[in-house]
Length: 276
Image 1: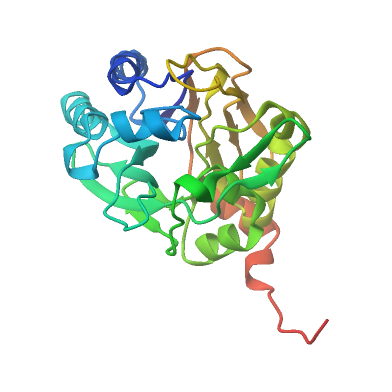
Image 2 (image 1 turned 60 degrees about the horizontal axis):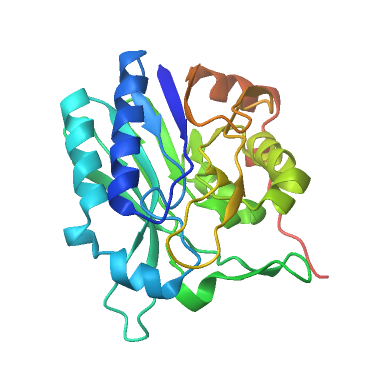
Protein backbone atom coordinates (compact mmCIF):
# COMPACT_ATOMS: atom_id res chain seq x y z
CA UNK A 1 0.00 0.00 0.00
CA UNK A 2 1.49 3.33 -1.02
CA UNK A 3 1.77 5.62 1.99
CA UNK A 4 2.92 9.24 2.09
CA UNK A 5 4.44 11.25 4.93
CA UNK A 6 3.88 14.99 4.50
CA UNK A 7 6.71 17.07 5.92
CA UNK A 8 5.50 20.61 6.57
CA UNK A 9 6.84 23.94 7.76
CA UNK A 10 3.55 25.32 9.04
CA UNK A 11 3.23 28.98 9.98
CA UNK A 12 0.91 30.46 12.61
CA UNK A 13 -1.81 31.04 9.98
CA UNK A 14 -4.30 28.15 9.79
CA UNK A 15 -5.72 29.44 6.50
CA UNK A 16 -2.32 29.55 4.80
CA UNK A 17 -1.37 26.15 6.19
CA UNK A 18 -4.57 24.56 4.89
CA UNK A 19 -3.81 25.73 1.35
CA UNK A 20 -0.32 24.21 1.52
CA UNK A 21 -1.46 20.96 3.11
CA UNK A 22 -4.25 20.42 0.58
CA UNK A 23 -1.79 20.94 -2.28
CA UNK A 24 0.59 18.36 -0.83
CA UNK A 25 -2.28 15.91 -0.29
CA UNK A 26 -3.18 16.16 -3.96
CA UNK A 27 0.47 15.72 -4.93
CA UNK A 28 0.79 12.59 -2.78
CA UNK A 29 -2.47 11.12 -4.07
CA UNK A 30 -1.36 11.87 -7.61
CA UNK A 31 1.70 9.70 -6.97
CA UNK A 32 -0.55 6.84 -5.88
CA UNK A 33 -0.67 7.31 -2.10
CA UNK A 34 -3.71 5.69 -0.49
CA UNK A 35 -2.76 6.63 3.08
CA UNK A 36 -1.35 10.09 3.81
CA UNK A 37 -0.01 11.38 7.12
CA UNK A 38 0.50 14.97 8.27
CA UNK A 39 2.58 16.12 11.27
CA UNK A 40 1.73 17.49 14.70
CA UNK A 41 -0.03 20.90 14.80
CA UNK A 42 -0.76 20.82 11.08
CA UNK A 43 -3.01 23.84 11.46
CA UNK A 44 -0.84 26.24 13.46
CA UNK A 45 2.71 26.33 14.83
CA UNK A 46 2.87 29.17 17.32
CA UNK A 47 4.61 30.00 20.59
CA UNK A 48 2.13 32.82 21.33
CA UNK A 49 -0.86 31.85 23.49
CA UNK A 50 -2.52 35.18 22.67
CA UNK A 51 -2.25 34.47 18.96
CA UNK A 52 -3.53 30.93 19.43
CA UNK A 53 -6.58 32.24 21.26
CA UNK A 54 -7.23 34.52 18.31
CA UNK A 55 -6.88 32.00 15.47
CA UNK A 56 -7.68 28.55 16.89
CA UNK A 57 -11.17 27.08 16.74
CA UNK A 58 -13.22 24.34 18.38
CA UNK A 59 -13.31 20.98 16.61
CA UNK A 60 -16.86 21.57 15.39
CA UNK A 61 -15.82 24.78 13.63
CA UNK A 62 -12.21 24.07 12.67
CA UNK A 63 -11.53 25.05 9.07
CA UNK A 64 -8.49 22.75 8.77
CA UNK A 65 -10.41 19.68 9.91
CA UNK A 66 -13.32 20.40 7.59
CA UNK A 67 -11.03 21.19 4.66
CA UNK A 68 -8.92 18.06 5.06
CA UNK A 69 -11.98 15.84 5.55
CA UNK A 70 -13.32 17.21 2.27
CA UNK A 71 -9.98 16.63 0.54
CA UNK A 72 -9.74 13.04 1.79
CA UNK A 73 -13.24 12.32 0.48
CA UNK A 74 -12.53 13.91 -2.89
CA UNK A 75 -9.26 12.00 -3.29
CA UNK A 76 -10.63 8.76 -1.81
CA UNK A 77 -7.71 8.32 0.61
CA UNK A 78 -7.14 7.43 4.23
CA UNK A 79 -5.72 10.43 6.08
CA UNK A 80 -3.98 10.83 9.41
CA UNK A 81 -4.16 14.45 10.51
CA UNK A 82 -1.19 14.22 12.84
CA UNK A 83 -2.71 16.75 15.18
CA UNK A 84 -4.61 20.00 15.30
CA UNK A 85 -4.40 22.61 18.03
CA UNK A 86 -8.02 23.12 19.07
CA UNK A 87 -9.96 25.18 21.56
CA UNK A 88 -11.87 23.31 24.26
CA UNK A 89 -14.57 24.17 26.76
CA UNK A 90 -12.23 23.59 29.69
CA UNK A 91 -12.67 26.22 32.40
CA UNK A 92 -8.93 26.92 32.44
CA UNK A 93 -8.99 27.73 28.73
CA UNK A 94 -6.38 25.17 27.73
CA UNK A 95 -6.32 23.75 24.20
CA UNK A 96 -6.37 20.15 22.98
CA UNK A 97 -3.58 18.67 20.86
CA UNK A 98 -5.76 16.22 18.93
CA UNK A 99 -5.03 13.66 16.21
CA UNK A 100 -7.64 12.44 13.72
CA UNK A 101 -7.88 9.40 11.47
CA UNK A 102 -10.09 10.07 8.45
CA UNK A 103 -11.48 7.41 6.09
CA UNK A 104 -11.89 7.75 2.29
CA UNK A 105 -15.45 9.05 2.79
CA UNK A 106 -14.08 11.95 4.80
CA UNK A 107 -15.43 10.57 8.08
CA UNK A 108 -13.60 10.71 11.40
CA UNK A 109 -12.98 7.12 12.53
CA UNK A 110 -10.66 7.87 15.49
CA UNK A 111 -9.55 10.76 17.69
CA UNK A 112 -6.63 10.88 20.08
CA UNK A 113 -5.59 13.65 22.50
CA UNK A 114 -1.86 13.80 23.28
CA UNK A 115 -1.26 12.23 26.68
CA UNK A 116 2.26 13.35 27.59
CA UNK A 117 2.97 17.08 27.81
CA UNK A 118 6.33 18.50 26.70
CA UNK A 119 7.35 20.32 29.90
CA UNK A 120 11.14 20.43 29.65
CA UNK A 121 14.21 22.63 29.98
CA UNK A 122 16.33 21.67 27.01
CA UNK A 123 18.95 24.30 27.84
CA UNK A 124 19.30 27.61 29.69
CA UNK A 125 17.78 29.37 26.67
CA UNK A 126 15.28 26.77 25.43
CA UNK A 127 12.37 25.58 27.56
CA UNK A 128 8.82 24.42 26.93
CA UNK A 129 5.70 24.21 29.10
CA UNK A 130 3.14 22.52 26.90
CA UNK A 131 0.84 21.85 29.85
CA UNK A 132 0.43 25.60 30.38
CA UNK A 133 -1.47 25.86 27.11
CA UNK A 134 -2.69 22.31 26.46
CA UNK A 135 -4.52 19.83 28.64
CA UNK A 136 -3.38 16.19 28.42
CA UNK A 137 -5.51 13.36 27.15
CA UNK A 138 -6.08 10.21 29.18
CA UNK A 139 -6.98 7.51 26.64
CA UNK A 140 -4.87 5.37 24.31
CA UNK A 141 -6.41 4.64 20.91
CA UNK A 142 -6.09 1.84 18.34
CA UNK A 143 -8.18 2.18 15.17
CA UNK A 144 -9.09 -0.65 12.78
CA UNK A 145 -8.58 -0.08 9.06
CA UNK A 146 -8.63 -2.41 6.03
CA UNK A 147 -4.82 -2.24 5.84
CA UNK A 148 -4.06 -2.88 9.53
CA UNK A 149 -4.69 -1.64 13.05
CA UNK A 150 -3.32 1.84 13.71
CA UNK A 151 -2.06 3.03 17.10
CA UNK A 152 -2.16 6.79 17.62
CA UNK A 153 0.36 8.94 19.46
CA UNK A 154 1.85 12.43 19.20
CA UNK A 155 5.45 13.67 19.48
CA UNK A 156 6.59 13.66 23.16
CA UNK A 157 4.62 10.43 23.69
CA UNK A 158 7.54 8.83 21.85
CA UNK A 159 9.63 8.83 25.05
CA UNK A 160 7.14 6.65 26.94
CA UNK A 161 7.70 3.10 25.76
CA UNK A 162 4.87 1.61 27.82
CA UNK A 163 2.28 3.46 25.70
CA UNK A 164 3.52 1.82 22.50
CA UNK A 165 3.72 -1.61 24.11
CA UNK A 166 0.12 -1.21 25.23
CA UNK A 167 -0.92 -0.17 21.72
CA UNK A 168 0.87 -3.14 20.15
CA UNK A 169 -0.57 -5.59 22.66
CA UNK A 170 -4.01 -4.14 21.89
CA UNK A 171 -3.50 -5.13 18.26
CA UNK A 172 -1.71 -2.22 16.59
CA UNK A 173 0.32 -3.08 13.48
CA UNK A 174 1.23 0.52 12.65
CA UNK A 175 2.25 3.22 15.15
CA UNK A 176 1.88 6.87 14.19
CA UNK A 177 4.17 9.50 15.73
CA UNK A 178 3.33 12.89 14.14
CA UNK A 179 5.73 15.43 15.57
CA UNK A 180 7.15 18.92 15.84
CA UNK A 181 10.43 17.91 17.50
CA UNK A 182 12.90 20.58 18.62
CA UNK A 183 16.16 20.69 16.71
CA UNK A 184 18.27 19.89 19.80
CA UNK A 185 16.31 16.86 21.00
CA UNK A 186 15.65 15.77 17.43
CA UNK A 187 19.33 15.57 16.56
CA UNK A 188 20.04 13.70 19.79
CA UNK A 189 17.15 11.26 20.10
CA UNK A 190 14.60 11.24 17.25
CA UNK A 191 15.92 8.38 15.14
CA UNK A 192 16.97 6.24 18.10
CA UNK A 193 13.58 6.51 19.78
CA UNK A 194 11.64 5.75 16.60
CA UNK A 195 13.75 2.67 15.91
CA UNK A 196 13.44 1.52 19.52
CA UNK A 197 9.63 1.76 19.44
CA UNK A 198 9.53 -0.26 16.20
CA UNK A 199 11.91 -2.95 17.47
CA UNK A 200 10.20 -3.27 20.86
CA UNK A 201 6.74 -3.71 19.36
CA UNK A 202 7.36 -5.29 15.95
CA UNK A 203 5.25 -2.51 14.42
CA UNK A 204 5.73 -0.13 11.55
CA UNK A 205 6.48 3.33 12.93
CA UNK A 206 5.41 6.21 10.69
CA UNK A 207 6.44 9.69 11.81
CA UNK A 208 5.46 12.76 9.78
CA UNK A 209 7.23 15.84 11.10
CA UNK A 210 7.35 19.61 10.99
CA UNK A 211 10.66 20.99 9.67
CA UNK A 212 12.45 24.33 9.53
CA UNK A 213 11.88 27.81 10.91
CA UNK A 214 8.17 28.51 11.20
CA UNK A 215 6.91 31.91 10.09
CA UNK A 216 5.25 33.77 12.96
CA UNK A 217 3.15 36.92 12.93
CA UNK A 218 3.23 36.98 16.73
CA UNK A 219 5.71 35.67 19.28
CA UNK A 220 9.06 34.00 18.76
CA UNK A 221 9.35 31.77 15.65
CA UNK A 222 9.80 28.08 16.41
CA UNK A 223 12.32 25.82 14.70
CA UNK A 224 11.72 22.10 14.28
CA UNK A 225 13.92 19.16 13.34
CA UNK A 226 12.14 17.50 10.42
CA UNK A 227 13.44 14.08 9.30
CA UNK A 228 10.04 12.47 8.82
CA UNK A 229 10.71 8.75 9.00
CA UNK A 230 9.21 5.37 8.24
CA UNK A 231 10.67 2.48 10.25
CA UNK A 232 10.07 -1.21 9.57
CA UNK A 233 8.99 -3.69 12.28
CA UNK A 234 12.60 -4.92 12.28
CA UNK A 235 13.91 -1.41 12.95
CA UNK A 236 15.09 -0.58 9.43
CA UNK A 237 14.75 2.99 8.16
CA UNK A 238 12.67 2.95 4.98
CA UNK A 239 12.74 6.71 4.50
CA UNK A 240 14.29 9.79 6.08
CA UNK A 241 12.94 13.02 4.58
CA UNK A 242 15.76 15.18 5.89
CA UNK A 243 14.60 18.80 6.01
CA UNK A 244 12.84 18.96 2.63
CA UNK A 245 9.21 20.07 2.64
CA UNK A 246 6.58 17.99 0.86
CA UNK A 247 5.48 14.35 0.56
CA UNK A 248 7.71 11.28 0.66
CA UNK A 249 6.26 7.90 -0.30
CA UNK A 250 6.85 4.34 0.86
CA UNK A 251 5.26 0.96 0.12
CA UNK A 252 3.68 -0.44 3.27
CA UNK A 253 3.36 -4.23 3.57
CA UNK A 254 1.72 -5.09 6.88
CA UNK A 255 2.70 -8.76 6.47
CA UNK A 256 6.14 -7.67 7.67
CA UNK A 257 4.66 -7.17 11.14
CA UNK A 258 3.82 -10.85 11.67
CA UNK A 259 7.16 -11.84 10.13
CA UNK A 260 9.11 -9.71 12.62
CA UNK A 261 7.03 -10.87 15.58
CA UNK A 262 7.43 -14.52 14.65
CA UNK A 263 11.19 -14.05 14.64
CA UNK A 264 11.21 -12.39 18.08
CA UNK A 265 7.95 -12.80 20.00
CA UNK A 266 8.82 -10.32 22.74
CA UNK A 267 5.25 -9.00 23.00
CA UNK A 268 4.24 -12.40 24.41
CA UNK A 269 7.07 -12.65 26.91
CA UNK A 270 6.05 -10.16 29.61
CA UNK A 271 6.55 -11.43 33.12
CA UNK A 272 5.40 -10.05 36.45
CA UNK A 273 8.22 -9.11 38.82
CA UNK A 274 8.71 -7.68 42.29
CA UNK A 275 10.35 -4.43 43.25
CA UNK A 276 12.44 -2.49 42.94
